[in-house]
Image 1 (cartoon, rainbow, N blue to C red):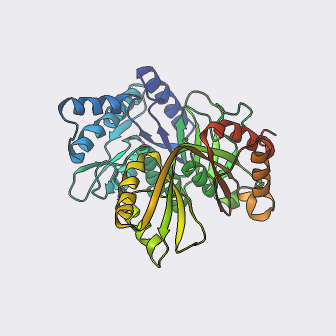
Image 2 (image 1 turned 90 degrees about the vertical axis):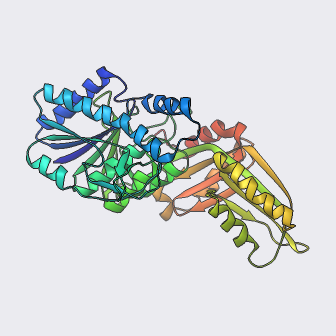
Length: 403
């Protein structure tokens, strides 16, 4: 088999852990597999580099930050390659550039445009273990770029697709995907399988195990993903096509997102195109709008409520202020003391009453639902943040996810 293995910052946090990774990679090689490894910077390294930059400037150019931050992964890749060679396993470290990763030119959050796997394929034919510095690539001008938070996951999936790997293993400090956060609900169970679409929903709705963009790319490239821990031999969770999962559960998991703010627009002048103007302006300012509710028009005005990530709130306020000043909106209010709790499962497609059960679970705990959003495989509810963990436990119990 041809296997891509990605190790995150905690897995390579110090020299002993890098040696542990080297042992795991060499065992995979001994089993007769070809291996490409993608590594993150050692835990804490990126923050340290940011601190160095801020010592000189709080406003360093993004291009210079990319050059600086990409060095963390290169250090890890070099050290792991040295360790493997010392153990008698021929290995070669590669930067994103040498691995053929080409991105656009949006520094600090670039998107991969393509990968030329020729150099990697040649090294694989020579029997070498390849260790790629994750999180980075180069644009068409040859400038170093980085892929944003979780970018090493993205590197691993893209490489797996480019070299047509049989499997892409994402190693973290958790043993797989759980029915919900075990820190909130100790009875949460690890899933053996989950579909791309379910994982996409869980990732976008608050689950932090995998970066959302990496799951999207895995689905697009049809890459089988396994997420597992680097600290034991415990089996992980396979993320794959829905048709590859024989028994599809009604609900796979409960997600919680506390990074939410609600914006209420009162007395919005109800004329054709006003909603388009508001939300286009928000989009132009890179504000990520999630749920939207608009009430029926009354006396020529309407009310619009929507949610945004807390980090986008200030930008959203600036946009809303322009409409208030123009008289298109009479008043506005903001609430950061909310959260979004979501029920996710492909089994919803063929079963009725899933949403009703969620609403009943909330009612049984006297939890008021402020906003609701649904799709084929999810039901999301905005509630007061003080009920966040109670809601998760109640829903987990209602769908009997501990069985």
